[in-house]
View (spheres, rainbow, N blue to C red):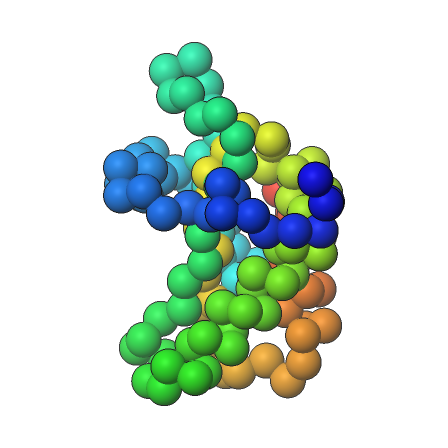
Length: 123
């Protein structure tokens, strides 16, 4: 399998997984990116890592803007999957949010903030 891919088995879709994540997950923020994550333990059986992306309708009224930000967030995860796995583990679920009213100027802004989020988790 390609390392720089985002296959459907890595997408967080199931309602019970999302409910579990919001019920027991831990929040972490860096600049404009927030993440809620939950690692697997003995009680929780998470077989692989899954990730979801969300952008607030409150901050971005137009669907075009929300979809653009979601694409940028997914792409930053896809290209930096190894950094994500080192920081959050192979068996975890997470959801990434854009927590700012400002649209980023370029993809590199989003990618740098995502990498800083991973570094903050490690250190």
